[in-house]
Image (cartoon, rainbow, N blue to C red; front, side, top):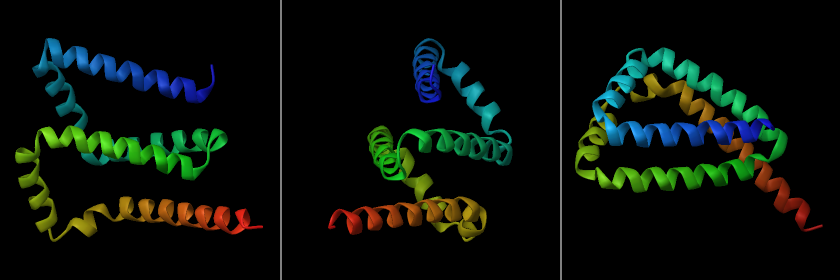
Length: 133
């Protein structure tokens, strides 16, 4: 089985398990989530390492422009999900925006997103430049 198929299978299993657990015992899911978020720095490091591994394998099959198109799809799906809880989410968003340390706390992720954005911009520029020839 190809690595991308393994990634797809793993997210498929995660979605099905999450929906089943939340349907049967929402408190069990909350306990699981609380354990994951108990050590946010460790969670972030693990997530970034896994994201790097996934990105490595994705780049073997598709380009960064296609990956960003998928990110748009996931962002829109997330937006649709958050829309259900807009009244609860807006106060949290306001709290985050008012956090004076937001740049200090999120600097690594901001740098990563900027590097990825520059990469996409360069790829788009090169694809448009060479497509004219």
